[in-house]
Amino acid sequence: MKKCRVREFLTSGSEGPREVIQVQDLWVRRDGHTVLEDITFNVREGSFLGIIGPNGAGKTTLLRAILGLVTPERGSIRVLGLSPRELRHELHHIGYMPQQVLFDPRFPVSVYDVVMMGRACCIGPLRFPTRADREAVLRSIADVGLEGLERKPIGELSGGQQKRAFLARALCLETSILLLDEPTAGLDLESQARFMDLLVSLKEERRLTVVFVSHDVNVLARFADEIVCINRSMHLHGPPREVLGSDRLREAYRCEFDFLAGAGSPSPSA
Image (cartoon, rainbow, N blue to C red; front, side, top):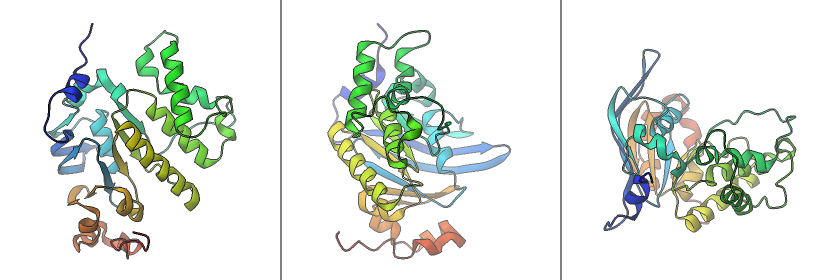
Protein backbone atom coordinates (compact mmCIF):
# COMPACT_ATOMS: atom_id res chain seq x y z
CA MET A 1 0.00 0.00 0.00
CA LYS A 2 1.27 3.44 -0.93
CA LYS A 3 2.34 5.44 2.09
CA CYS A 4 0.31 8.58 2.76
CA ARG A 5 2.96 11.10 3.76
CA VAL A 6 0.40 13.83 4.46
CA ARG A 7 -1.39 11.63 6.98
CA GLU A 8 1.94 10.87 8.62
CA PHE A 9 2.69 14.59 8.79
CA LEU A 10 -0.70 15.39 10.34
CA THR A 11 -0.48 12.62 12.95
CA SER A 12 3.16 13.08 13.90
CA GLY A 13 3.87 14.37 17.38
CA SER A 14 4.16 18.14 17.57
CA GLU A 15 4.07 20.76 20.30
CA GLY A 16 1.50 23.36 19.28
CA PRO A 17 0.01 23.97 15.81
CA ARG A 18 2.11 22.82 12.87
CA GLU A 19 3.07 25.12 10.03
CA VAL A 20 1.08 23.45 7.25
CA ILE A 21 2.08 25.96 4.55
CA GLN A 22 5.59 27.38 4.34
CA VAL A 23 6.46 29.89 1.61
CA GLN A 24 10.08 31.04 1.53
CA ASP A 25 11.65 33.66 -0.78
CA LEU A 26 9.12 32.90 -3.54
CA TRP A 27 9.64 34.46 -6.98
CA VAL A 28 7.33 33.75 -9.92
CA ARG A 29 7.71 34.99 -13.50
CA ARG A 30 5.10 34.65 -16.24
CA ASP A 31 5.49 35.68 -19.88
CA GLY A 32 8.77 37.36 -19.07
CA HIS A 33 7.35 39.49 -16.24
CA THR A 34 7.88 39.14 -12.51
CA VAL A 35 4.48 38.44 -10.90
CA LEU A 36 5.67 37.68 -7.36
CA GLU A 37 8.96 38.52 -5.71
CA ASP A 38 10.47 37.64 -2.34
CA ILE A 39 7.25 36.32 -0.74
CA THR A 40 7.77 34.67 2.67
CA PHE A 41 5.14 33.57 5.20
CA ASN A 42 3.91 30.52 7.10
CA VAL A 43 0.37 29.33 7.84
CA ARG A 44 -0.37 27.51 11.09
CA GLU A 45 -2.63 24.49 11.24
CA GLY A 46 -6.24 25.44 12.00
CA SER A 47 -5.72 29.15 11.33
CA PHE A 48 -7.55 31.55 8.99
CA LEU A 49 -5.18 33.54 6.76
CA GLY A 50 -6.52 36.41 4.66
CA ILE A 51 -4.67 37.57 1.55
CA ILE A 52 -5.35 41.08 0.26
CA GLY A 53 -3.91 43.31 -2.44
CA PRO A 54 -5.00 45.40 -5.42
CA ASN A 55 -6.04 43.97 -8.77
CA GLY A 56 -3.13 42.30 -10.53
CA ALA A 57 -1.12 41.97 -7.30
CA GLY A 58 -0.46 38.25 -7.83
CA LYS A 59 -2.91 36.84 -5.27
CA THR A 60 -4.35 34.15 -7.55
CA THR A 61 -0.87 33.27 -8.80
CA LEU A 62 0.19 32.75 -5.18
CA LEU A 63 -2.63 30.26 -4.60
CA ARG A 64 -1.77 28.45 -7.84
CA ALA A 65 1.87 28.23 -6.78
CA ILE A 66 0.82 26.67 -3.46
CA LEU A 67 -1.19 24.11 -5.44
CA GLY A 68 1.76 23.36 -7.72
CA LEU A 69 -0.02 24.74 -10.80
CA VAL A 70 2.63 27.45 -11.24
CA THR A 71 6.37 26.74 -11.13
CA PRO A 72 8.39 29.31 -9.15
CA GLU A 73 11.51 30.83 -10.64
CA ARG A 74 13.14 30.49 -7.23
CA GLY A 75 12.27 30.00 -3.59
CA SER A 76 10.45 27.11 -1.95
CA ILE A 77 6.97 26.03 -0.92
CA ARG A 78 6.07 23.24 1.50
CA VAL A 79 2.47 22.19 1.98
CA LEU A 80 1.65 19.58 4.63
CA GLY A 81 5.33 18.70 4.72
CA LEU A 82 5.62 18.19 0.94
CA SER A 83 6.79 20.20 -2.04
CA PRO A 84 4.08 21.05 -4.62
CA ARG A 85 5.54 18.39 -6.94
CA GLU A 86 5.18 15.73 -4.24
CA LEU A 87 1.77 17.06 -3.26
CA ARG A 88 0.34 16.30 -6.72
CA HIS A 89 -0.13 12.71 -5.60
CA GLU A 90 -1.99 13.76 -2.44
CA LEU A 91 -4.03 16.74 -3.61
CA HIS A 92 -7.13 15.21 -2.03
CA HIS A 93 -6.00 16.93 1.18
CA ILE A 94 -6.39 20.37 -0.43
CA GLY A 95 -9.73 21.94 -1.30
CA TYR A 96 -9.66 24.75 -3.87
CA MET A 97 -12.44 27.15 -4.82
CA PRO A 98 -11.27 29.27 -7.78
CA GLN A 99 -12.24 32.86 -8.39
CA GLN A 100 -14.48 31.98 -11.32
CA VAL A 101 -16.16 28.68 -12.07
CA LEU A 102 -17.21 28.81 -15.70
CA PHE A 103 -20.19 26.70 -16.69
CA ASP A 104 -23.16 26.89 -19.02
CA PRO A 105 -26.21 27.43 -16.78
CA ARG A 106 -28.30 25.63 -19.40
CA PHE A 107 -26.22 22.47 -19.17
CA PRO A 108 -28.19 19.86 -17.20
CA VAL A 109 -25.61 19.09 -14.52
CA SER A 110 -26.95 18.65 -10.99
CA VAL A 111 -25.63 19.80 -7.64
CA TYR A 112 -24.70 16.18 -6.92
CA ASP A 113 -22.72 15.93 -10.19
CA VAL A 114 -20.85 19.18 -9.50
CA VAL A 115 -19.81 18.06 -6.03
CA MET A 116 -18.88 14.60 -7.28
CA MET A 117 -16.39 16.28 -9.65
CA GLY A 118 -14.42 17.15 -6.53
CA ARG A 119 -13.87 13.44 -5.90
CA ALA A 120 -12.13 12.95 -9.26
CA CYS A 121 -8.62 12.70 -7.80
CA CYS A 122 -9.86 10.08 -5.30
CA ILE A 123 -11.80 8.00 -7.82
CA GLY A 124 -9.11 7.91 -10.50
CA PRO A 125 -9.47 7.58 -14.28
CA LEU A 126 -11.87 5.07 -15.87
CA ARG A 127 -13.40 4.15 -12.51
CA PHE A 128 -16.86 4.55 -11.05
CA PRO A 129 -17.64 6.25 -7.72
CA THR A 130 -17.71 3.90 -4.77
CA ARG A 131 -20.15 3.95 -1.89
CA ALA A 132 -17.58 5.96 0.09
CA ASP A 133 -17.42 8.54 -2.71
CA ARG A 134 -21.21 8.88 -2.81
CA GLU A 135 -21.41 9.20 0.97
CA ALA A 136 -18.70 11.89 0.98
CA VAL A 137 -20.58 13.89 -1.66
CA LEU A 138 -23.91 13.69 0.17
CA ARG A 139 -22.25 14.61 3.46
CA SER A 140 -20.65 17.71 1.93
CA ILE A 141 -23.93 18.75 0.30
CA ALA A 142 -25.67 18.46 3.66
CA ASP A 143 -22.87 20.34 5.44
CA VAL A 144 -23.31 23.41 3.21
CA GLY A 145 -27.09 23.42 3.65
CA LEU A 146 -28.11 22.12 0.23
CA GLU A 147 -29.66 18.86 1.39
CA GLY A 148 -32.75 18.13 -0.74
CA LEU A 149 -31.30 19.97 -3.76
CA GLU A 150 -28.95 17.19 -4.86
CA ARG A 151 -30.72 16.64 -8.20
CA LYS A 152 -31.48 20.28 -8.93
CA PRO A 153 -29.61 21.68 -11.99
CA ILE A 154 -26.77 23.93 -10.85
CA GLY A 155 -27.95 26.67 -13.22
CA GLU A 156 -31.28 26.92 -11.39
CA LEU A 157 -29.71 27.75 -8.03
CA SER A 158 -29.33 31.26 -6.67
CA GLY A 159 -25.86 32.81 -6.67
CA GLY A 160 -25.41 32.06 -2.98
CA GLN A 161 -26.51 28.45 -3.43
CA GLN A 162 -24.10 28.00 -6.33
CA LYS A 163 -21.23 29.28 -4.18
CA ARG A 164 -22.18 26.76 -1.49
CA ALA A 165 -22.26 23.97 -4.07
CA PHE A 166 -18.73 24.83 -5.19
CA LEU A 167 -17.66 25.01 -1.55
CA ALA A 168 -19.10 21.50 -1.07
CA ARG A 169 -17.05 20.35 -4.07
CA ALA A 170 -13.89 21.67 -2.39
CA LEU A 171 -14.80 19.95 0.88
CA CYS A 172 -15.75 16.47 -0.32
CA LEU A 173 -12.17 15.18 -0.15
CA GLU A 174 -9.98 14.46 2.87
CA THR A 175 -9.67 18.23 3.04
CA SER A 176 -7.21 19.66 5.56
CA ILE A 177 -6.49 22.98 3.83
CA LEU A 178 -9.09 25.09 2.04
CA LEU A 179 -7.89 27.66 -0.52
CA LEU A 180 -10.57 30.19 -1.50
CA ASP A 181 -10.12 32.82 -4.21
CA GLU A 182 -12.69 35.64 -3.88
CA PRO A 183 -15.46 33.18 -2.88
CA THR A 184 -18.02 35.86 -2.00
CA ALA A 185 -17.53 37.99 -5.13
CA GLY A 186 -20.84 38.78 -6.81
CA LEU A 187 -22.98 38.01 -3.77
CA ASP A 188 -25.23 40.50 -2.02
CA LEU A 189 -24.43 41.43 1.58
CA GLU A 190 -26.91 38.97 3.09
CA SER A 191 -25.57 36.07 1.00
CA GLN A 192 -22.00 37.06 1.84
CA ALA A 193 -22.81 37.00 5.55
CA ARG A 194 -24.45 33.54 5.28
CA PHE A 195 -21.46 32.20 3.35
CA MET A 196 -18.96 33.50 5.91
CA ASP A 197 -20.95 32.15 8.86
CA LEU A 198 -21.11 28.76 7.12
CA LEU A 199 -17.38 28.80 6.33
CA VAL A 200 -16.36 29.62 9.90
CA SER A 201 -18.67 26.92 11.25
CA LEU A 202 -17.22 24.31 8.87
CA LYS A 203 -13.68 25.44 9.70
CA GLU A 204 -14.27 24.69 13.36
CA GLU A 205 -16.21 21.44 12.82
CA ARG A 206 -13.67 20.01 10.36
CA ARG A 207 -10.57 21.63 11.89
CA LEU A 208 -9.66 23.22 8.57
CA THR A 209 -6.86 25.60 7.73
CA VAL A 210 -8.31 28.38 5.56
CA VAL A 211 -6.48 30.65 3.12
CA PHE A 212 -8.92 33.28 1.86
CA VAL A 213 -8.18 35.78 -0.92
CA SER A 214 -10.53 38.76 -0.83
CA HIS A 215 -10.94 42.44 -1.66
CA ASP A 216 -13.31 42.80 1.29
CA VAL A 217 -10.91 43.84 4.01
CA ASN A 218 -13.75 44.40 6.48
CA VAL A 219 -14.68 40.71 6.26
CA LEU A 220 -11.09 39.68 6.85
CA ALA A 221 -10.78 42.14 9.74
CA ARG A 222 -13.59 40.21 11.40
CA PHE A 223 -12.66 36.60 10.62
CA ALA A 224 -8.94 36.27 9.82
CA ASP A 225 -6.29 35.38 12.40
CA GLU A 226 -3.61 36.95 10.22
CA ILE A 227 -3.52 38.94 6.98
CA VAL A 228 -0.90 39.03 4.23
CA CYS A 229 -0.93 42.08 1.97
CA ILE A 230 0.86 41.69 -1.36
CA ASN A 231 1.36 43.77 -4.46
CA ARG A 232 3.90 41.69 -6.34
CA SER A 233 6.09 41.80 -3.23
CA MET A 234 4.87 41.28 0.33
CA HIS A 235 4.11 44.57 2.06
CA LEU A 236 2.55 43.45 5.35
CA HIS A 237 1.93 40.31 7.39
CA GLY A 238 0.37 40.17 10.82
CA PRO A 239 -2.85 40.39 12.86
CA PRO A 240 -5.76 42.20 11.10
CA ARG A 241 -5.70 45.28 13.34
CA GLU A 242 -1.96 45.68 12.83
CA VAL A 243 -2.08 45.22 9.04
CA LEU A 244 -5.21 47.25 8.32
CA GLY A 245 -4.10 50.05 10.61
CA SER A 246 -0.66 50.37 9.02
CA ASP A 247 0.38 53.39 6.96
CA ARG A 248 2.15 50.95 4.64
CA LEU A 249 -1.22 49.78 3.34
CA ARG A 250 -1.42 52.96 1.25
CA GLU A 251 1.90 52.06 -0.36
CA ALA A 252 0.63 48.59 -1.27
CA TYR A 253 -2.64 49.80 -2.79
CA ARG A 254 -1.36 53.07 -4.24
CA CYS A 255 -4.18 54.72 -6.19
CA GLU A 256 -6.71 52.05 -5.14
CA PHE A 257 -6.41 52.99 -1.48
CA ASP A 258 -9.59 55.06 -1.12
CA PHE A 259 -11.90 52.07 -0.69
CA LEU A 260 -9.90 50.97 2.34
CA ALA A 261 -10.83 54.02 4.39
CA GLY A 262 -11.91 52.88 7.83
CA ALA A 263 -11.08 49.23 7.17
CA GLY A 264 -8.81 49.06 10.19
CA SER A 265 -11.50 50.23 12.56
CA PRO A 266 -13.45 47.61 14.48
CA SER A 267 -17.13 47.23 13.66
CA PRO A 268 -19.69 48.41 16.24
CA SER A 269 -20.51 44.81 17.10
CA ALA A 270 -16.87 43.82 17.59
